[in-house]
Image (tube, rainbow, N blue to C red; front, top):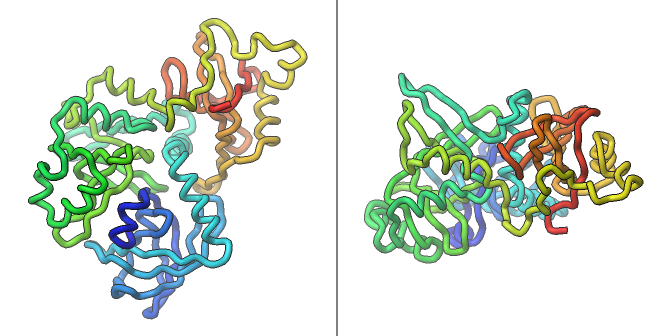
Length: 376
C-alpha cells in the first residue's frame, strides 16, 4: 500500500471507507480498498503519477473525518493506487486508534454487519451464504476469528517454504518479501469474499502462513507489486460449489469447529459456566439485582467506556467489548459473549457455548447475567 518496507511492517486490512481526494487534476470521491497504520489503497481515475501528493478527507464509520495528505507510492492494475499517509494534528492518533480497533475487533464488526443485514437471523454472524454462479450454488463460510479455517488447510494439505513454492517462479518479486515475512505457502488457491457495506469483492488467491503468526493472501502479479494482505478479518471462504466441497475441502465437523473459533487470543476467554448453573449463582441476592436481567445489561452499557460505534445505513450500532453477559435460552443452553446495542434492541453476541457463534436478542424476560470481561 505504501513502500515495500511498509508493506512488510504493517498488516493491511481490506476495508471500504469513503474518501474525498483533492488532486492537482481535480477532486474525486472514492473509497479505500485497504488500510494500514501508515497508508491506504484506493481506486482513482485518472491515476496520479508516482509521488503525487493529494489532500485526503477519510470518513470513519463512527462519523468522524481524518484529514491529511497522501503521497502516491504504488500504481496497480485497475486504477488502484497505494498512498502513504501524512496526517494533520490529532488525526494521526485518531487514525492509529481506528486501525488498532480494526485489528482487534474488525472481524467482529464484519459479524455485526451481517447481523445488520439480517437482524432476524440468529445465525447471520456465522456468515454462511449461498450464492448462485450460473447453475452452481456457491456456499461461503466464516474462517473463524483466529483463522482456524486456514490452520486446518495447512494441516490437511501440502505447503512449501517460499523458496520451494511455485510462486517463486510464477510471480517475479515474490521471493524477496516472502523470505522476510512468510513461513509456508499453500499449493492451491482459495476463493475469498470480502463484504463492506453494500459491496462485495471476490478474490481468488494463494494463502500464506506468516512468520510473525497469522495468515495473509498474496496480492500482486507481473504488473503489480507483491504484498501480503492480512486475513481472518471477517472474510468468507468458499467451501462448496454445487454441493461439492472445494479446496481446502473442510468437512462439516471442521466447519462447526471454525464457526466456534471466536476469539483473537485463547487467554481472553471468560470463565466457564457450569452446566445447569447460572454464572451469577454464587453471588448474593443483593448483588444479583445489579448484574442480572435486561436492565442490568442496559445500565452496564451506559456506564462502561470503550463502546465502538459504526453506522449501517440509517442506523447506529454500538459494540460493547467490555460488557459481557451469559444468556440462558429456553432450552437451557447458555451462551456467553460481548453485548451489542442496535437502537432500542440489546443483543448478546454468543461466542462461547453450544451453537456459537450466534446472536441472541434480549427481552425484559431474558435470563441474562453480566460476566467479568475477558482477561479479568
